[in-house]
Amino acid sequence: MRLSLAPRPADAGRVWSVIPLGGFVFGLVFGRWWTLLAVIPLASWILATNELEGNVGTWVAMVLSALLACAIGAGVALRRLHGRRAA
Image (cartoon, rainbow, N blue to C red):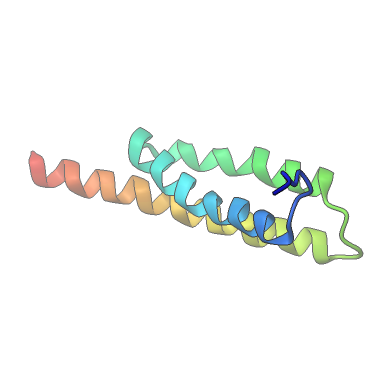
């Protein structure tokens, strides 16, 4: 059995699925609405490094950024709701 270091296409899908989960945890941990600004560096990085043709790269950056913003917002909202019930 040989160790294969070549990336598989399925590996990239796993990385992108971590974005919303990580965003939710980020929003849950910090619990402030300003944490939504964390979307800006991700969108900038995607736009700078994408190799997709035409407007597809922009579309992908917008969709992933919106997904991250929703996940962070959900985490912040959950933390705020939990804080209100405890008070």
